Image 1 (spheres, rainbow, N blue to C red):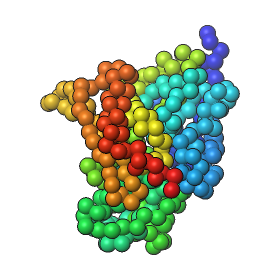
Image 2 (tube, one colour):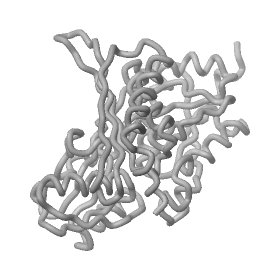
Image 3 (cartoon, one colour):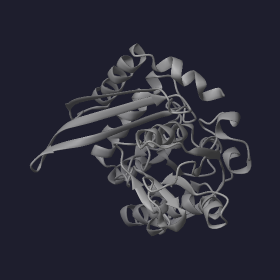
Image 4 (spheres, rainbow, N blue to C red):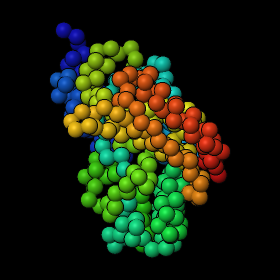
Length: 322
């Protein structure tokens, strides 16, 4: 018998309440699959301790580098990431062994007095740390004939919602998936349609990562993988990579599956890039057969990115450093 079978699998996770919650769900699933105990190993990332904005500290990778370093050093056996935090370039020594079924990809508004976005008054102050949300919320408000003020914020869910409870802001916008995973989805006063605000590439999805050399663990974790989620987020991340943008750039993307009755037969990929004030957007979509391989999903994303670049997307992303 393999002596490791009696030892706990070590799951690396960020320390935040949200990260601990989503890692806990994965841990339970892995226990059921492998019959082995799973212990959570809390790891502090640079993104957790820095108070600077994501664009100032680099954005891409600030929440995952410490977890990946722990994997490579053998301090943990696998790690759980929010997929939207992962850089699009995958290290050779690591593999995303599973992408479980995606949660709600939409953005959620938590506003005073139970207001929806459409009910917000002109000049409402909305908190967000995301350039993408900033851009698309301004554009959405403009379509409603309103002007809003976006305020840069950081912090955990309690901190962000606290700005609304204390009256400092009229509302904050968070990922619906995060609220749902910590059991606070009912605090959202509005779930913003993806037709108005496209989510971040990979939003609502998780990545379960381990060493590429650990074939036994890869095989076990693969049972958690949802092929539709993997195809969708692979296309979204391919678009992001082809735009040469990171998670701090004002880029939204969503691939959704189109069904004919009970049969899923097509995938629609939508992408958007905008100026930070939302005054100019490049927003395009493409529809094709559901990708049956990694290469097909990548091709779908790259093709749409090429069309967006031809429409001037690169010039708009230049604002991400402002």
